Image (cartoon, rainbow, N blue to C red; front, side, top):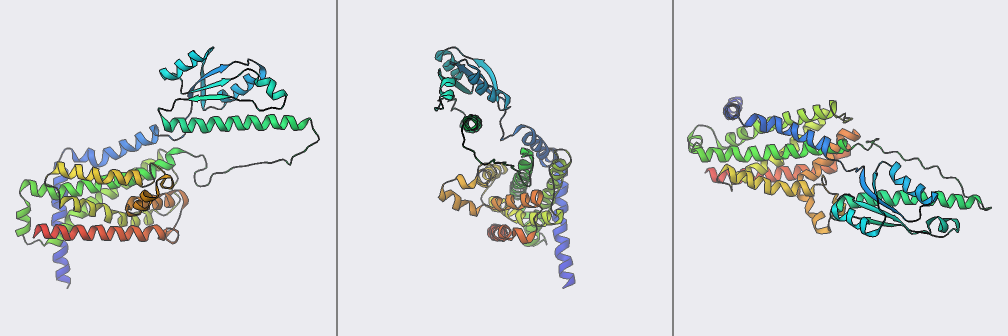
Amino acid sequence: MVASVHRFLRGVWSIVVKELIQARRDPSMFPLIFVAPLVQLALFGYAVATNIRHIPTAIMDEDRTAQSRAFVGRFGSSGYFSLLYFADSERELEELIQSGKAEIAIRVPRGFARAAKRRESASVQMILDGSDSNTTAIALGYAVSIAREHSAEVAAEWLRGTRLQLPAIDLRARAWYNEDLDNVNFVVPGIICTILSLVTTVLTAQAVVRERERGTMEQLIVSPISRTQFIVGKLVPFMIIGYIDVFLILTVGTFWFGVPFRGSVVLLYALAFVFLLSTLGTGLLISTVANTQGQASLAANFLLTPWFLLSGFVFPIENMPTVIQWATYLIPLRYFLVVIRGIMLKGLGLVDLWQQVLPLAALGVSILGVSVMRLQKRLG
């Protein structure tokens, strides 16, 4: 029994060493595996932001009173809007929006202050550039919030002149797990998931297809190494590479970007292994249908793109159509994204994450099992 295990491990180790030597000899492999993830982390960490500030804004104040100027000043002092243009006519306002110089225009009509004195509703027109729907939606939310705050203060002024008294409300909001609502705390866990998916899937698919392209697959089949040893030996190096990438991104994200890590590193690496079953299995599955490395890369990108878009990293799953929401249950990245954010930001343990780990493990075993069977048939 011991001799059989030793023979099996020796065969696996020979394939692992072969893959590592081949990776070292490839000049493009090092930057692809280790440099590209850090570059992507830097790009996402610094460039990607869901909170938008300094939105170019045009103002048309037809009332020209102290009240209208105070209302407009709220937008400038909020930090979300930059009051760059002050138009004197509708035509000028329209040109600013059409040219893209302003993304939002605020028009305060005549009678704004008079309506406030009479305790009547005052209408304010907001024109938004809808060509960028994401920015427009966020800008609209900011503008509505500022308008509501102004209305609340006006209403309070009205009540001071009456006998009516309302109870004071002291609303104090606090965000848990990401107190400053820092976008990079949201991005870094997602980057770990996407890089781990991309690197391990593409490299695994290409490694098997490469043997077929170079004509060395037949030599491996007739060698004393069994099919199982060949498959395990092919998977282990890319699992190691995946773990190294996770370590690099975690280190940079924690010490450079200041992303908190409140959970267990051991648990994170253990559950990363469960996730790697899916990505490595997907790479093997691609290798059974692709004949060239180019085809393998295209197939990997074709499969992984829905993973990224439907995992909840880019768009909230709750906002998707019901049919698409059901389809996301077949995407391993959906579960691992919740797992890694729960460990890093919330400090959750396995007891808290079992509802994500079980389907993730089931998908990983299923995908890897189907891939191994298909590859063994093709090797046979």
